[in-house]
Image 1 (cartoon, rainbow, N blue to C red):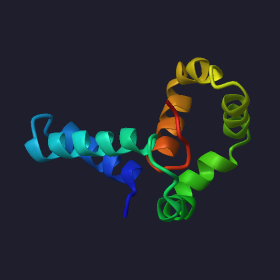
Image 2 (tube, rainbow, N blue to C red):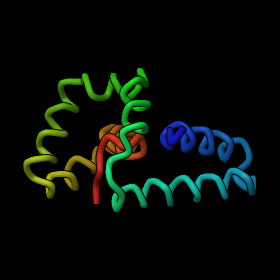
Image 3 (cartoon, rainbow, N blue to C red):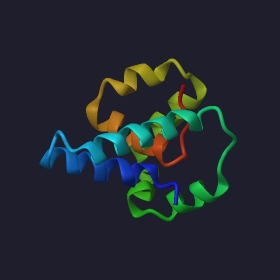
Length: 105
């Protein structure tokens, strides 16, 4: 279903339980490769539709502070580095990237 942000969360939860779980380690690596590869592919409309239906993604996109951050990043891509220093913002941006909504280099 290309819900990489959900898969990533599931693998991370599995690794908290068993940090040496081979299936979870392989899965997280595979998901991270797919997320990285998205940067070089065209927008996947199906993936975006799935993401936009996700309440967690909707909450991130509706947050006024995040909307301002996304606007800052759009007008000044270098601003992304400053925003990524905030762990909460970084997590939200990574979820948006994993969901296909945001494409960051």
